[in-house]
Image (cartoon, rainbow, N blue to C red; front, side, top):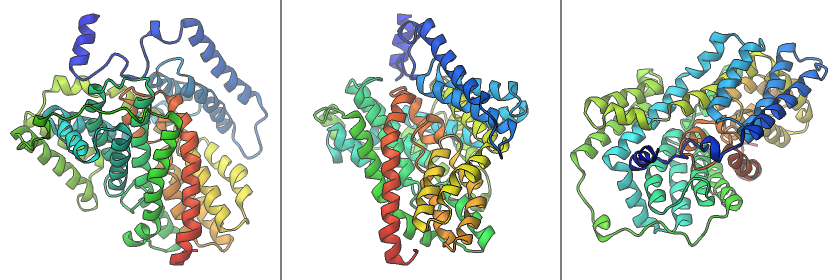
Amino acid sequence: MAKVEAELQLQGHVVEKQGYPEAPQGHSMQRTLLLILLAIGVGVAVWMLPTPEGLSEKGHTYLALLAALLIMFLTEPIPLPMVMASSGLAMVLLGIEQVKVVWAGYANPTVFFVIGCLMIAIIAEHVGLTERLGRLILRHTGTNIVKFSFISCFGLGVASSIMHDVAATTIGIMAMLPLMKAANIHPGSREGAFLLLALPFSCSAGGMGTLVGGGRNMVSAAFLKDITGIDISFFEWTLYAMPAAILAIPAVWCAVYLVFRPNRNLHFKELSEEQKAKKPFTTAEIKALIVVALVFLGFFTKDWHGQDYSIVVFGGAILALIMRLINWEELNHKTEWAVALMVFGGGIALGTAMGTSGAADYLAKEIFFPLIDGKGWLILFVGMGVFAALLTNLMANVAAAALILPIAIPLAQMNGINPVIVAMALGMYTSFAYLLVVGCPPNVVSYTTGYFKPSQMAKAGLVALPLGVLILALVAMTWWKVIGLV
């Protein structure tokens, strides 16, 4: 066992890296069973309630399952990947969804996109690119972890508006991890949770900044054009949303800071004179940079070549193997297959079932939208945004936007409200998937490091999400009035 632990540490891993310790150090068998029984009890209690009018039996069963799963998400009686595998089994056994449809969620292209991004980051780390990036950031920020986090989160958050937020998150994590390990910042520490939650939160917030910052933005614009004929250009979306992104990034960073209160006097290790000296790129680093550049070129030219992002990023990983930048054994060992497949894939399957069971439609039409109908543009903007922000924690943000927009845009038109406001709300508020790990890819990528637990993320999200909602409302009331959108 000691030999295995030593090997893991040598390869940049720690025993606790999965985010859940081995059985003797975690929940006792008795506590595990109690938590599972509690989750089942909550689910059964919801299921035994009378089925509300307008909700199908299948939708009722889904909501009962969801209630049980939420308890398991936050308490983790078993590892989170197995919680998500259990959700798939339960959906089939309870008749909520067919087995082929359920497992198809685990094989969604977005899952493979996340895995591919992890692989590219591992390759960059292996050749030394991420260490070089970490040293570069340290030269400009100094070694204080709070200052380092703020500057890197803001920079990568803004970058997320023109690249994928998961790509920006992955780059940041791989640059940060070696520095954290050298500074003895361990999983379970306040500093570790702060650093590894502030980054994905910031990158998700930054993704709202431009039309290409995330699929949710493009889906919102596409639905608006299909339903109303109004076409939002790249410039218009940036004009409306970028100020909000620039304000939201530091706001959500501050929320994570306030929750975890890291030691402000803690520093990364000072760079030696040798590390400060600028060194020429090695052949392996140059090859890796070419691979990364080709991957990003593929991202930016998707509309031209038509291939899914997962195809582009896996093409880059295969090219790196062909170029002998890393061997398969190491790449396979370091890639968190289980977390990406089970956690994010399970989240997609769960979100799909929420739509097909009628549960999402019922929550929107019967519960939430009647509360905001006829209350004016601001209540519609904020209310619909809050609903979308909550819903996107249970399904992909693209799916959440696609589910709500066909209902929300006509609702806005009936109330004489500019439908562009609704499209912007759905694209922007779905950036705040801060409550559950399954909410968005940046959360999953960061979770693979093992530095925080789902309950810690929910704790930070309960502060960051309302703060993000407030920021967007303030931007809408001020900036949007100045430019004449409202």
